[in-house]
Length: 289
Image 1 (cartoon, rainbow, N blue to C red):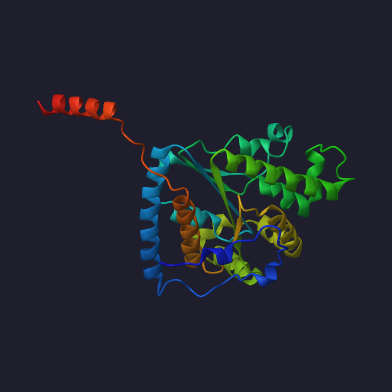
Image 2 (cartoon, rainbow, N blue to C red):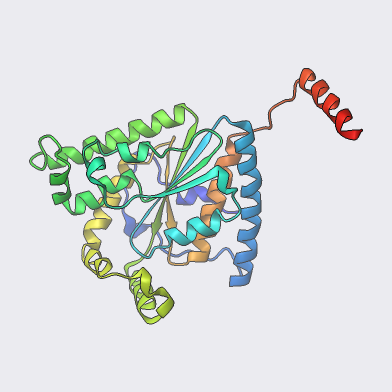
């Protein structure tokens, strides 16, 4: 399956206008059954690459997912990574910070969860919440005791962008590849998915009144995302704007981007020395008797 993944990448230093980015593109599959078959192929390939990542023990992968409510982050994570060995992958969801987390800088709680070499880490929401929801609701900063905030609130966002970019460049230099996805959902598709959660009893648990409250801030969130994507998409850690109105398509796009990133590492299994080969043959003889 060929996908031009660069079409979804935000170029470094480019201003982002999300109205110009599609929330739906021509499907990569012929039917729902076909989409599942294509994804199954990708999942199998990802499984092999994850094993190679673990064996080579030189890099780590950090996948970051950000989106509006109902965009499909949970589904994308569970389906795309369904074939990954659980021992080599960890998923973290970051919601309201605890009192202990609020007493540290905004990167502290996520930094503790970074993947070690040979592993894949997944952030379902991340430190980017601190320039998204905190920007839409600046009163959140009052609980963080930021010096000169909210008086110097515009400066806070620029400083945080710099901190984030510096962190991701540091991670890249030390072997962690950061791959970021913004699942771009239309407001109309979100409305349909909210109604679906209300109408289907087995999905009622997914819905809360807070979702409707946040929906009222749609334009503010879009503005916050535009500034964030433009300021923090770099060559080392690019953002990908994934059309999310079609969840099957979105999962295929995400899987291909992750596969390409892993292949770009040009990993190989560790070479076995001659001494180790002799040792293995000696053990083999013992097992043969």
